[in-house]
Image (cartoon, rainbow, N blue to C red):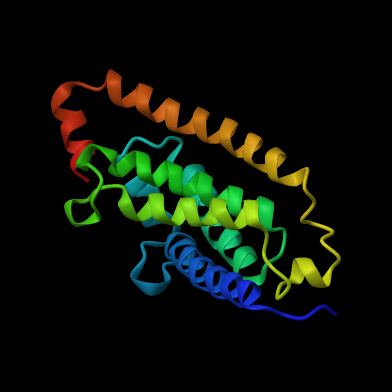
Amino acid sequence: MTCIDRRDVGLLLLRLGTGGVLAAHGAQKLLGWFGGGGLEGTAQFFESVGYRPAKPSALAAGIAEAGGGTLLALGLATPAAGAAAAGAMAGAAAVHAPQGFFAQDGGYEYPASLGLTATSLAVTGPGRLSLDARSGHAFNRDWMVPTAFAVTAAVTTLVVGARAKRLRQKPEGEQEALSEE
């Protein structure tokens, strides 16, 4: 085995931190852990902010966060994991965008940061301290990065675009209420 260097340790720490945060957020959505609403509560929230059908949307977001985060932390299937997490964060950023950039004002700063970090990990790769490295990179081939992001970009564009269209069609009073949540 080749010598482990500080880049590998840095990637491990970045994967563990980002993946852990994403997995915890996914567990809130899916299981109600860590003070989350569980699938039912998340579906109600998704309905209120214009993601429909709400329950499948909540399930997809929870799986992308929990699954993508867990896989990132493990360094397994890194291109798919990073792309899935980035797609979920793009959907979250769309909800927060009307409040501007900064998280203190309810803005999209936090999901954008998580999404960018997940994207960077998918592009950079997990490093040698990962299950991808241990498996000979069976799920981390160069062609998988553009493929995973192309699929994720297409799906995210459809989902976020459909939400935006629904919001534009709402009467103004309802639209303002949706953007305040």
